[in-house]
Image 1 (tube, rainbow, N blue to C red):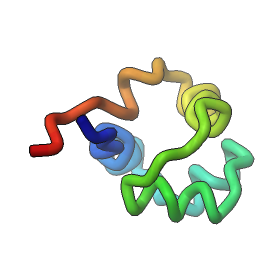
Image 2: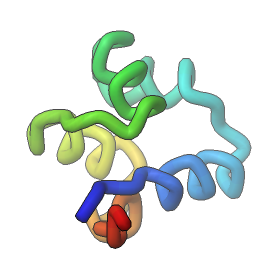
Image 3: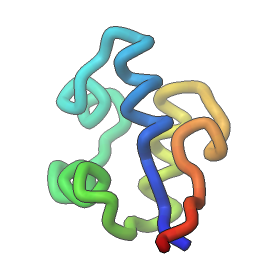
Length: 68
């Protein structure tokens, strides 16, 4: 299983936002944003900051996918 943040990127498009704007309103570091962009692991604290900034649930920004 792998984590996909495609839902987050789609949400940003739907809201007319870019990654820099998300970083500013959520207080997430640029290093964490880079990890998100690469689909790497990040802490739940970062995910919760993003959810708070976007007023959404964690299931709306990420999902588990079969890695094979």
